[in-house]
Image 1 (cartoon, one colour):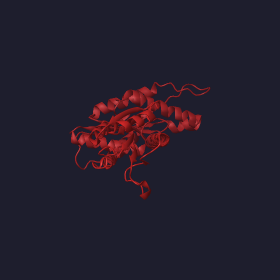
Image 2 (cartoon, helix red, strand yellow):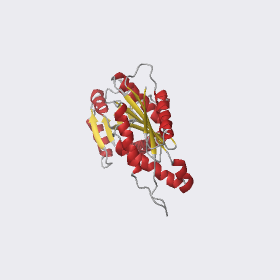
Image 3 (tube, one colour):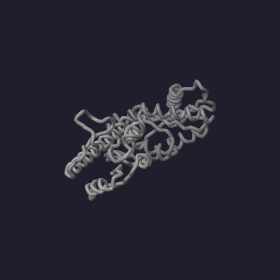
Image 4 (tube, one colour):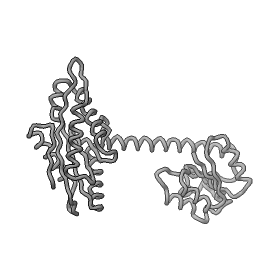
Length: 300
């Protein structure tokens, strides 16, 4: 953890430095609020010890400045002051230590700060994990429907700004219901994972890919038009056809996939992503009606 100490008095600084020794932290020191602010802006500071009496922290409204510019990782602030803290909490600080203080008291306050910062970091990590779980399909690791809609809308807007074409591919497994009914859900999940891996191998690393519903996947491809999107779809269809998916006491599964492509050469200010998705999904239906395991392309 990176600790920043704002202290201009050499004797007080020596006391704080001695208390912090051996705590396996990165420690930096500043004698003025300007120096401290530069350290905060450089990033990485999680804990600040500020002596209000020996620096310009109070006069410069330094603490409020830090709070106003607070990032996602909050900075814990311990204020050392001769103010009468019994009158109420001091705005912007997490804890106060009144002068004069005992070394043991400073040690205790630092230990409390470290525990709170550790807990806060754990909570932030847990929140980020929950957000990721809410945005991604756990089976395939692709974006779920809501996340794909947001991302695809962003890709559409970028294509509009840059005057680029955009194609949207919908993929659907022709015989997924048959596989599920005959071999069970576990085999169905293996098929979905195999298709997800094939899509990953046959598409570009930065393409926007999502699991739309059940055995249906969508790809939003900025800068790709008609025939190129068709070729990508065919690579995926041929790739999954060659995938070896084993089931007990049976030959490897023969998985068939159909694709529908909706392609736009020109994106206007009124173009929206949902109608494009509907067109691509409709094109999948046309591909299935024509016998399946093929691509149907529409230009919008």
